[in-house]
Length: 297
Ligand SMILES: Cc1cc2nc3c(=O)[nH]c(=O)nc-3n(C[C@H](O)[C@H](O)[C@H](O)COP(=O)(O)OP(=O)(O)OC[C@H]3O[C@@H](n4cnc5c(N)ncnc54)[C@H](O)[C@@H]3O)c2cc1C
Image 1 (cartoon, rainbow, N blue to C red):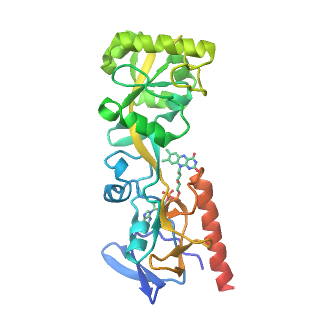
Image 2 (image 1 turned 90 degrees about the vertical axis):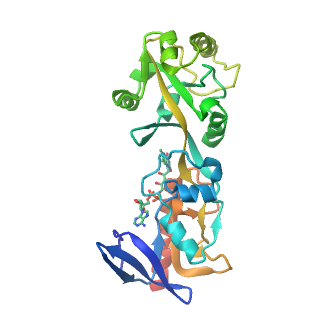
Image 3 (image 1 turned 180 degrees about the vertical axis):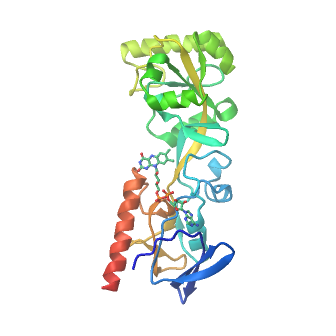
């Protein structure tokens, strides 16, 4: 029998290390749903600052682009009952998060359309299309105010419906010249003009002599107006979590595993650092379900 749990679980009920039920609340009423097996699939913990501080303090206090339900409930629940955790300090950061009215949006599309990252001195400070987003975030964290602007021109803006959507929401500063844009950004106009001039030479010659950017080296600043969006790092995925065995059964801190408690998706650490977390999560869910079915046949 398959249960899809829509009520918020409060806790697991265990007897001699075996899960016998899940305690839930509906309105003011609390009750226990008896169960033979549980798969925890509650996602990561990026939306729970208490857990971020505890597990990945390097990134505490930063915004996150994860779903609001990434509150680490399953992780906390499992840990309370003696589950082992692994690599909870490992997170994948997004270096291009814009926060406005309590909404955190990934502006990575602006870099993908060729945008460069400049600091408050109006200068680039790294390979702004470096594939390791967490390293990019570390470089960004070292800049004044731990922030950067992504700067693009109108050619880049026109190429992306997603960016146009963000522009309509008012996320971008806009100006007809780079000097005007720099004033709005609060960076030295001469420095921004110099940065753009030097970078467009790199684009023309296909070689970034300063930071070795190889991909999406396209922004030649040929089409005004110019745009800038303020960004900072934010958590995109928490890659550690509940430790599981090959059947996705939750491993106990003191050795062994819970025979009928499984975990899948971002709530787990699965022995890899998940280049594509969604695919790995689906695979884990499949393995857990197969294992449960095998036991009940
Ligand atoms: C901006 C961004 C871009 C990404 N891009 C990619 C990509 O290109 N490729 C890729 O593979 N991955 C990507 N990811 C990561 C991927 O989206 C997540 O790792 C994946 O969605 C995790 O799936 P999940 O089912 O484990 O958790 P989630 O999708 O977070 O689902 C968990 C669910 O459990 C619910 N829940 C939590 N606690 C409780 C509770 N107590 N009671 C009831 N329900 C609860 C939550 O509300 C949520 O609905 C990206 C993430 C972000 C933020």
